[in-house]
Image (cartoon, rainbow over all chains, first blue to last red; front, side, top):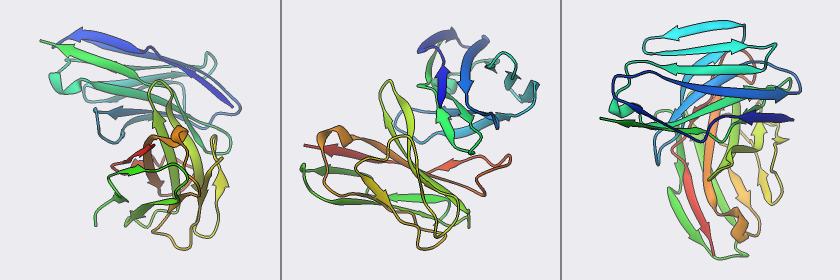
Length: 109
Length: 114
């Protein structure tokens, strides 16, 4: 099974940087995903890490350390539209995804 | 149709009634999934199908059944609804169950069981 922990809420100012941490314990590991979910909408894919290190995609970056069971999502140059929930998900040895409860990020002007 | 569609968008259901949530994708994805999302608990996998003709149980399968007669459709049935099945249900699909392929989510069905 999976145990995935991420903070419940974070608040940041427009233009700032926010880092959302995710720790996990898993029975087998086949990748870690980050999804963004705006209120009342479906989750949408942000990033995928399967090897250790940093993956950068524009204003968003995601980092993975498999030995520490740790990942973070970095959001730079925050915009009001980045206010959303961010979901950390781990894929196990059977290729099934388990999700954390999500981190609600509020961006203030 | 583009992507994944779900029907109905929302539903109020009396306890004990039978209900089928529909999910259709037009991306010819092999794998499909059903999740429920509850406040504070995140998304939990109900059932999945790695390819047409096969299904498997996820984390919370009790009270739900699925079928996968073809590639495009993956209906979820609640045989006799109970109030604890009040939730938002998301269907998702991916090109395959493994690899880098991400899962794409439908818009969700909001179900209230009274």
